[in-house]
Length: 207
Image 1 (tube, rainbow, N blue to C red):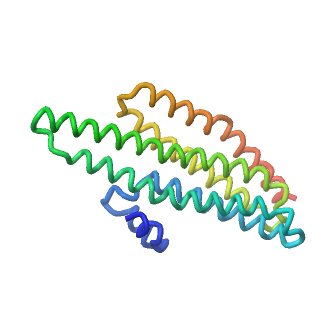
Image 2: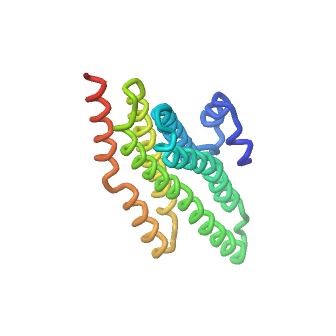
Image 3: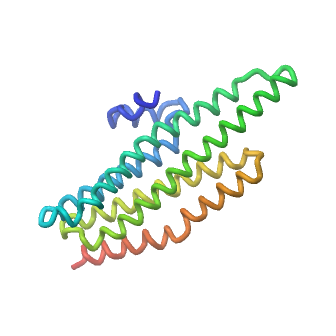
């Protein structure tokens, strides 16, 4: 399923999201938003690098890696939800069946929390990179950095919603606390960071 999902055309992926099937869902959409943002920022730095390729090579490579990570996470999120769905369908007639179902459900929910958390952390790295790239953006491409930052923030906050909804059903208090703290660190200051990028881009456009 993973390979089929990430190899869909844009129209097919949009159709998949619009269908009655739960996969792909919001988590996959958030990850794909991150991939789009990383692609935009990479494009901007590649344009800037035409005058001095060596000066930008490492940052372009980082953005390509981020985009690759996001695409993997599009599929990983769908797979994680599928495991939750499969656990929900397990029989629960006897006490043994109920216990096994609960065990599988909790394991699946933990996985379904960790994947969007990785999306959120990756999106924050993208937002950091977008902010660092904005001053290097050529005049005609500065708006692309702004869009990249907006996509990064959408990926971050969209992923955060998916983390929280899965943590709400997780029984392991220690895991809930640890994952919640990781998410808080990813979110901390992100709105202000996005605002700085947008303000910079708008100031360049208004000239």
